[in-house]
Image: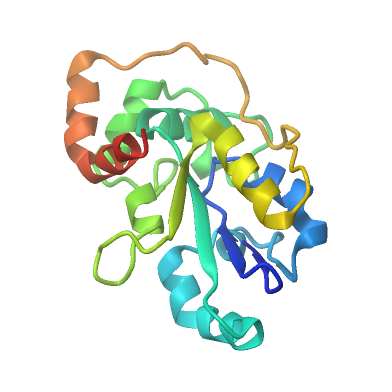
Length: 198
């Protein structure tokens, strides 16, 4: 999570949505950079609203605007699957080695724990009542739009370098139509949010 009091801006770090790249590009502009502990780095909207919003707005003397990336749901899961296939993963139970993508998605939909315990993007951006709490969502496949927004807000050009990229092995693996349809039902709100950003 990144926050600039001067610019009244909070950037929530959706996992697998270029958060490390944004951190590298923007840290020098921020008053608050949470980066080391994954659970804190990827603070969702509800936790921000409950624990940090009032604190930051007290110093900003006004409302902070929240922004976040949102990724196409299949692509988001695919990136997680590839990321957890990397060699030397610290917790072997979280490794996807030997698990194909379709099996990974089935484990995810069945509510399995590791390696498919990922949550949902729709919950990450949700307020306590279930509505979208984040002020501005940007599509991951249009990262240039978020960079343009940030460039205008920070009054300098924001350019991203690729960092913490998931391994490319099996990058072309696809889901069967049956599993894709089940996933669309399972993550109906995620697909709805993503498609609303078109």
